[in-house]
Length: 139
Ligand SMILES: [Zn+2]
Ligand SMILES: [Zn+2]
Image 1 (spheres, rainbow, N blue to C red):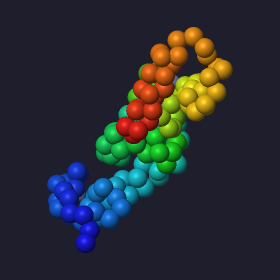
Image 2 (cartoon, protein in one colour):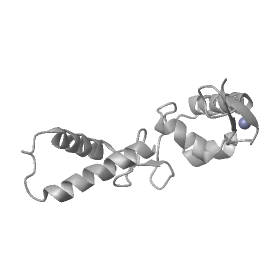
Image 3 (cartoon, helix red, strand yellow):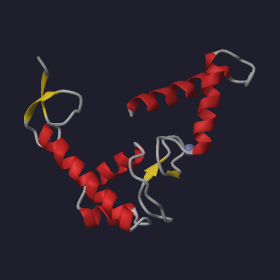
């Protein structure tokens, strides 16, 4: 049988199938997503604050959809949004900015075998790689 658990949104007990939400909340979230998507279609440059205010959808959900690449939201200076998990730069989707993603993949390659990239302070580099790996897993 399925795995019984409490829905993190409404607290109801439900059988977990593949989403971590009960059916009611999944449906509700899909409806909310549709609202946001529609609003963005008419107002493609709307900042996150405005979307949250107009649609009434929780900011954390809007941000999650952005991270998942489901919605595309423009930013103005000072507006809220996703930030790079490494340097804090505002980004549009994913977990890292383009620069950090590049650094990160270079480090991953480095850690995977060739030690030719940076000879100095190998210990420090290794720790930094682990830090990134943990951060990636968190998400
Ligand atoms: Zn629920
Ligand atoms: Zn960054």
